[in-house]
Image 1 (tube, rainbow, N blue to C red):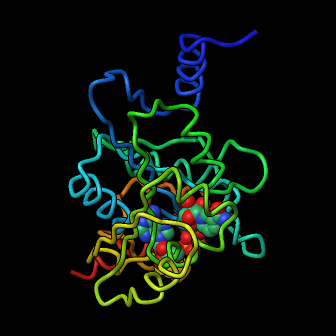
Image 2 (cartoon, rainbow, N blue to C red):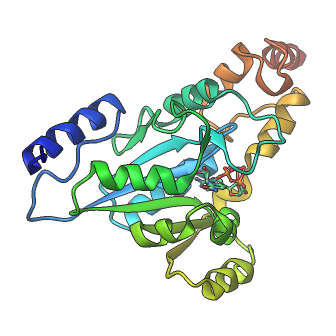
Length: 246
Ligand code: NAP
């Protein structure tokens, strides 16, 4: 028996609801633009948030869904915090922005989460009047031709590469240009991307403050769950000591 389009619509709606994705595409007379912010987010920081906000406005997106990577493809040999923690921090960081959402779409998937699979699934779920914009770091974009099923990515998504000022885009541009697939890429320069997740992890390990680098609830979560070598209350205690010196 063949499904008719109403059945497919119903199934897609079910998946979207279950997978905490935004409902988009209902009005067939308009085009929707869905931003998918892909990253390990270990941890999420203000650079990511500023990049997503800029992409939202510059590319006229309807919503940006932050999608922490499940088991990142190129990080099998490295320690990555559990998906549950990275998702929780992403949720905390995005909760006060009405056009940001955090999704479990990748963290709940078994096995390595390849971007091509994610985008192909999203393409199935959304009607054709929803365009997909995959936003990530320009370093990652430079590698994209090596990713599994890169041709699928080229076919179904616009790419947005976020860079820090002074970043040399030559490598990304030449790799993309040499590829047999046609990638549609927009690069955005984001001053706040001077911040990086590794810098935050190092600071935590040294007991240094994360204030103004990531939203406060994320800092609280890191200390409460002792991520990145955080000693609970160490930071607060040193703040208190300092306060008593005045
Ligand atoms: P990464 O190699 O750890 O990051 C490369 C650079 O990009 C870092 O400077 C990183 O800074 C920055 N970055 C990462 N995500 C960003 C974002 N959304 N916005 C702005 N800057 C960002 O990259 P990754 O985090 O592992 O992967 C990025 C995305 O590509 C994820 O969605 C991942 O699943 C996907 N990916 C897919 C494949 C595949 O399908 N084969 C392979 C690799 C990556 P921070 O460390 O500060 O974030």
